[in-house]
Length: 452
Image (cartoon, rainbow, N blue to C red; front, top):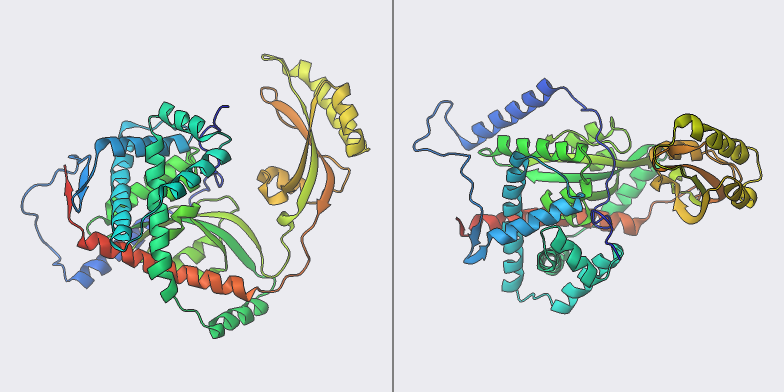
């Protein structure tokens, strides 16, 4: 069985990039102001010179982290794993080199996380790693053996995937033992949020994903350039979730950067002002935030405590008619017109099978489809569609022309009440995320790292 192309189950794209949300000069001004403030905070002189030479084009491909080696093979395999997760994306040599150095940094962090877990007597049993690996393979519609063969064809390996799994499990268990239990959220805080939600019923909240890259004053420009290059790759079709998993330094990296549903007041002011202007499926430019930069994706929006129509669950029949390669448009149009007339003429799903048979098409039944998971252009068409009605034909002569017939719809409940347990869990996660970042920062600060 062929493995799903691009490790689709691991990294599902969140949508195409949006038009930049602010002008280039405004972005540069904000960056310059932040650097000036940082220089003042550190007590740096206004004018200084560098002693000695540093060539930024000299790259160190491997590292030794507290005595443990990250080899060039480790770096190559992890880089190829990332590219495979993005559909074997074709990138320039310069971009490959930049990604390679980012992979080195990721592997260093992963090594530090595994070492810290080991120092605290947290060992990840091989059985747990194998089970997680098998689950990833299953979601890619392959057996573990088939998945391993696929990874090899991409220039990576089963061992590389399992090493990444080990790092994620080790860090998660370390945090659950020593960080998460120290995070306290009081009932009073939760009830305050509940009251705020009631007061804001009907206002907009957002489903947001984030790629967070930390920066210091000495590497701020380099990190910003890297963030822009990540954005370019996503704009060219790369998976936001894949980049978040590999490059984001927030603990939400393990879930593709997903922050869940948030209101603007729950986000840093720098992010809140941008989210409110973004279209669904939009992706922002790199946003300066305290300690680094964030790239955010707007997955969805809804109104507070009001049912989201995109949560409707649909039952559909899909009629598809295909054409031989090279078919002229004038030849195909009569069949497409007949498909439109027959499906728009009434009868609903009860006649869909006969229509497909008469036009030489194929029919597929799809149940349990969430409206919000359909392509955005179809969401707009189907949101007001009644049972028995059909979409206009869509598609192409090369890939087939389709019609969706609505067989049933389960609309979401029209009212909702704030869930105190969900609110408490979200607050605890946000605070745990901040502590996890500080934990990893301290590990980096105390580590002995040599580059070769």
